[in-house]
Image 1 (cartoon, rainbow, N blue to C red):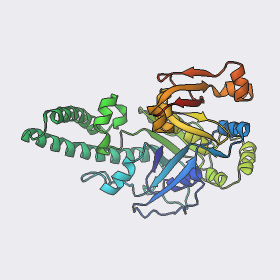
Image 2 (cartoon, rainbow, N blue to C red; image 1 turned 135 degrees about the vertical axis):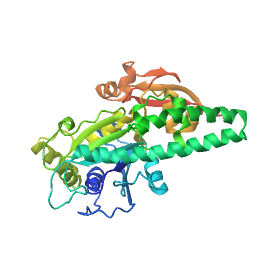
Image 3 (cartoon, helix red, strand yellow; image 1 turned 120 degrees about the vertical axis):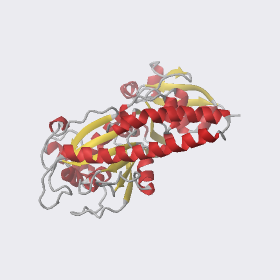
Image 4 (cartoon, rainbow, N blue to C red; image 1 turned 30 degrees about the vertical axis):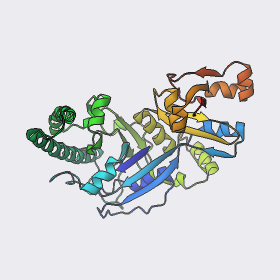
Length: 364
C-alpha cells in the first residue's frame, strides 16, 4: 500500500510525514516549491502480531508495511495551463490513496502562503488544482479517442473499448467542470479498469489530516465541512506526534498515557487508511515465521493464497482457518485443533479480518 502525502507549501506536510515515519526530514519555515519526494516504509502497528509472535516464538516476525511518499511542489496554479507537470502527476498517480495535510493552527514563525490560516479555503485550493488537472487529462484523452475513432484504424474489439472509455470520460467531464472530485462518482470494476492508466488524481480515496498544532481537537467537523465519498477526515497534533515518533516504544506509551492520548497518530492514520481502502489483515504462523498480510475486505481464501505466493493459489486445495480470538483463547494451535476450532475452507471462503490461515496446496 502506497499513500502520497500532499498539501500546500507550509501546510506542515513534512511534520506529518516525520510523525508517521519516525523520519527526521528538516521542516522549513519557507517552502521552495520544487518537486521533492521523501519516501519511507512503515511497519503497520498491530498488537495481534506481537501476541502471535510470543505464542510461536518464531525465528522471524514480519509485519505488514505501508509506504508513505511525501510529495512537495504543490501550490496554487499548478493545475492550470494543461494540468500538472508530468513528473509530479506520475508521483501522485502511483499512490493507492492520498493523505492531504491541511494546516489548522496559527504560528507566527511559520508564515502562511495565503497570509492567513483558513483550513476550509486551503482544502478547496488544492482540490481545485487537482480537479483542473484531471479535467485537462480527460479533455486530452477525449481528443485522442475522437481522432482514433474518426480514422477507424483500430480493430473492432479495440474500437468497442474506446467507445466505452469515451462514454465514461464524457460523464467525467461535466462532473469535473462542476468542481467535484471523481471519487464522488460510483464506478463499476470494469469502468475503473478503463481509466486506471490515466493518472487521474481526484479518483483516488483521500484522507484529510488537519494539523491542529497544540490544540486537543478530535472532531474535524468543528474545523471544516467536507462531504465527499471515499474520503475520511482526522485531526493530529503534528508537532507533538513528531516528538512521540522519536521516542522509544516504552517512553511513547508512557507519554500517551500521561496526556490521555488513546491512539498514536501513526496507528490512527493507518487504521483510517485501511478503512478508506477497504483492506484487512490475515496471519500465517509457525516456528519459522509469524507474518501479517494485507488483502481487500471480501477477498477469498484463494486470493489470500495468492497474496502469499502465486504457486499457492495455482495449486490451492484447502485453507485451514481459525479466528485470531479463538486461537488466543485456546493457547496454542494444538489445543485449538483438539477443541475442533480449526476448520477447512474452500476457494470461495471469504477471509475475515484476523483469520490465521494455513494453505494446503499441490503444484505438480
